[in-house]
Amino acid sequence: MYDLVIRGGTVFDGTGAAPVEADVAIDNGVITAIGKITEGAAEEIDAKGQIVTPGFIDVHTHYDGQVTWDPYLQPSTFHGVTTAVMGNCGVGFAPCKPAQRDWLLSLMEGVEDIPGTALAEGIKWNWESFADYMDAVEASPLALDVGLQIPHAAVRAYVMGERAPALEPATEAETEEMARLVVEALDAGALGFSTSRTVKHKDSKGGSTPTLKAEAAELHGIARAMGKAGKGVLQLIADFKDTDNEFAMLRGMVELSGRPMSITIEQDDRWPNIWARVLDNIADANKAGLPMKGQVPPRATGLLLGLTASLNPFVMHQTFRSIWGAPLETQVKALRDPEFRAKLLAEEPDYPAGEIIEMICTAYHKMFALGETPDYEPAPERSVKAIAEASGRHPREVLLDMMLERDGNALLYFPLMNYTSGSLDNVEKMLKHPNTAFGLSDGGAHCGIICDASFPSTLLTHWGRDRTRGPKLPLEWLIHGLTARNAELINVLDRGILAPGMKADVNVIDFDNLKLYSPHIVNDLPAGGKRLIQQADGYTASIVSGTVAFREGVPTGALNGKLVRGAQSRPAGVRIATAAE
Image (cartoon, rainbow, N blue to C red; front, side, top):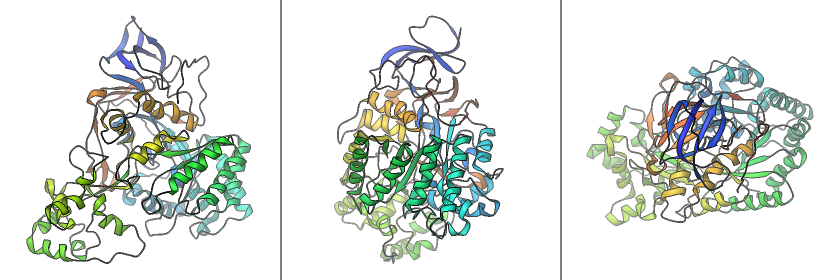
């Protein structure tokens, strides 16, 4: 008798091969058979009419603090994620000296919009070194597997002290010490090293991320040490304003180390062609045999604006600021008052020169009502600008009416990145590029303004089933990208494919009825902190190491997750029949 049998589902094995109808048997956390299984099981799942896939691997999350207090890592686990990797973009909480704790909290709050009060309340700081942090995570109850990367910002501050946030160059001795700490973390089981070179990343007081101007000698010194250790992946984000020179420095890290690198790829309206140039450079690197990929999203990086969110289009209006932070009911009452409304709509705020906030507040052609069921490729005629023009009103009037729907709980969708053309045509090019991987969900981050942890569901529903404004993509290829390809990206080869001998991380999904709901605010972080979550219907079961951890996205109480320590080899004797790209 087997521990668990999933019967009669349409099996997408993660290799990109065509699906087959089959049963899947599991014993002791491992897949033991796939095919027609007549033997019974202690537990069975009827998957007839549903699809069966490997568990999804999210390579780009920011649950670095949350993982120490929340076993379930929602909202990612609402969407079939069974392995989540954190420590991305150079930010995290180890290594850390006691005197640096508040600064690291401020950096995470600023860069990733995670409430500092929630982090301060939830994190117990029972670590200093990265190895200590890994031990603390490993000791925490987990419903899914997690992998950790060592963040450059924390390493730099640990070694350089106040000189790190001052953006001073590292000395040769400091570079050597940083490299030693990184290798020490890799030896303890860190999956890789991450850094950030973007001006968008600032701490809560407006200071730049300390890695912004790290010089080639520093980055190459760390990479060279990783190469000697023969361990770890590289992950980073950069602005690429000086595209070719910046890329050459990063390519040098791969040349010196031989370690795989993935780079954030997004299209910014202000510099709409950089993303394509970076991908061209990545393609050239791959032709030279260098393992470099772009991490790409399946939709726009979408801001959520409204009275319950962190931002809305009126935040720079002094009239609105008089009620900002008041209880929602008080704000709604004021905004419905004719006199207050007229004063607000007549006001012309002063926007700081060169800051993105002006675009967020005034780019009416990129603002859309989110509604109960989100449309992540909205047509231009649905924009606030188009509605205002058709109705003869000022766009601010339209915005205000939209924000007041559902008693002030309504949200607006603002596709900040990857929507320059008013469609997802460029995202399609990103997804289909031969040197990209699916990522950038930022699960656990941007708590009050972005909720992109649902990226796996968008890949399945929008690209695999529902898209009307362009071609769909093959479902088996999409699942391959969410599973085996991401396993290869971070070198955890014991998962991501359904085959006998592989780790039994499995999703059973009612694909025909898979449905995303719009994000909404909850106040369930420590200290009552708020965050956006987004739920879905259709995830019948998510199985972690052979145990059902979630049914319909709801935790079963099983805590079968583990900390993934280092690269994971393909289990001995496993034969993968088909692989597709």
